Length: 144
Image (cartoon, rainbow, N blue to C red):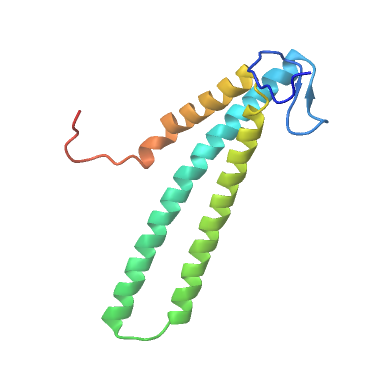
């Protein structure tokens, strides 16, 4: 027996994640490939959402500092800290979802099935195609 030997295959009979998720029919296999592709798209979406939330948090932080310095009020430091904590909590939840989706995709690809691998790649590519422009650094002179 060749334990530890990992080669890619194209069999449709495999188990994903847990024993109860055994694929026996073409319909189940295609559904699983679509689900893996959607999960990869979701992973890319979480990267974009995290970037947007971080930018909003920075803008909120800057405006709060301006208010504090313009009004010469030592006020609301507790409000400011609470708001900062809430932003960070939101970022942490998004990061956790992104990490979980990444690990699930990795586990699926570790089934060494070519179709599962291609589904993940297509999902990542489609996610970047549809959402990557939101965070892409455009502007300035583009040099080739």
